[in-house]
Amino acid sequence: MSHHHKNIAVWSSMLILTVSMGFMSQETRAEENHVQILKETGSAFTTIAKKAIAAVVFIEVEKDVASGMSGHHGTYNNPFEFFGEEFFERYFGQPHPPRQPRHYRQMGQGSGFLISKDGDILTNNHVVGDADRITVTLHDGRKFQAEKVGSDAKSEVAVIRIKGDDFPFLTLGDSDVLEIGEWVIAVGNPFGLTETVTAGIVSAKGRSNIGIADYENFIQTDAAINPGNSGGPLLNIRGEVIGVNTAIYSQSGGYMGIGFAIPINMARSIKDQLLTNGKVVRGYLGVYIQTVDKDMASSFGLDAAEGILISQVMEDSAAEKSGLKEGDIITHVDGKKVKETGTFRNSIAALSPGTEVKLTLFRDRKKKTIKAVTGELPGEEPEATETAADTTEKIGLSVTELTPEIARQLRLDQETKGVLITEVKLGGAAWNAGLRQGMLVTSVNRQNIDTLESFNQALADASDAEVILLKITDGRGSRYVTVRVTE
Image (tube, rainbow, N blue to C red; front, side, top):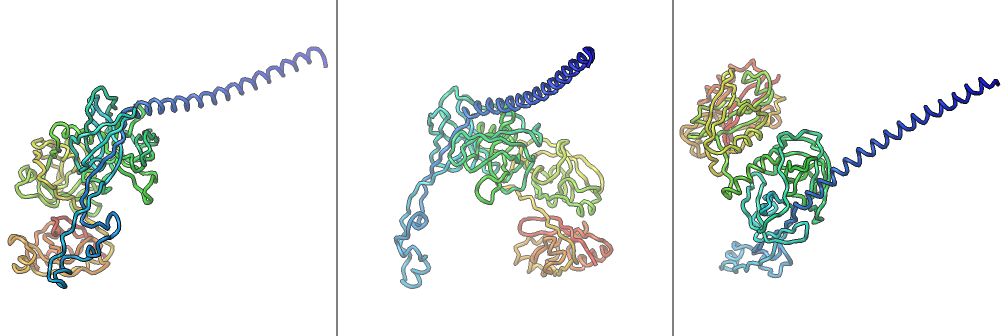
């Protein structure tokens, strides 16, 4: 090989080596970048955790309970405890010997977090509830006896307070801007293991009908939450509180990947009222409501199943005074779309009594806007009722005239009109739609029913319909039910 060719070979080898080193350098740099990203993510979690842990508290509660049944918390020492007063009066001609109450101490624990330098702590109602003593332990080991400022069982929010100043506290964020898939961090004391931090994402928003509280709008997360986490904060990646950890879905009692937190915007509203008044006053309209399904939407002339249906307007209520009527379908509250009963109830309850609210509704196949003024919730609000329509078979329904005698036996007002359901065929369309013996049918396809004749005529008029809309009344109130007619 000539000298010239040797030089070419050398330069070629050097070029290949240089290119190879370049590729290796790029791969190395990529790996380093990935590692650096993970380090920065871990560093962010660490920073948030350090700040949060300082403000998260361990709550221990005690309650003195008196029990007349010693066997509930020990052995049955008195054989007469097995028998009631009826037994003694029948066989011994004397009343049951008076039971001596047994006192025991009920213990519980949970989490909470400081929201002010003055010692205000946000937690769950079921953590502090009706406790006689509340002990709070801070991250630095200091213990305080806390006083309960206020507690709201309907939303599961509670505020307690410890005496002192310059406490570390957490900043409350904005849960309305939270997105599904965002990183979140849960901090608390699961199983009494203090200062536990777990991370995950927002799995879903607006979860209601869970059965945890009366007013539900939960954030769902897969960040590990266990018993004892209740009342602790759920944080975003900026270290702001966006939720109050409240419950888990579990078949074992432990974490199964589904946890629920109260959105901080909802908790903040409750907290503000508790701090100001020691109680919560909710807005109230006075309507029975139900979700609009596909068949019901079609019956009312809606193109899609949306909004909530007013099945009954309470007499002398804010709703009646505002001009709302049964059969109205509310689609928006102050411009915000309403998708389900829970959302509607929460939006109205969050308003102070006397607040004007703009309701967009669908009435008589036309859109309409009504300005309603909220009243004050009088004790217990009527429950939102849901129809359970599974209309795949024939109607299978028998009714009878509502006579004055029957009305008296059922303790109904004499003004009540309708026909009484006497029999529902098991497995039939009416049964599957939730109709039961003893209910009243007060309208068929929006036609009021006051006699058996009018009921039969209304059914005859609907003989060609695939779906029949019935309004029924039971002991809990009124609601609409759709029944699908099939051959």
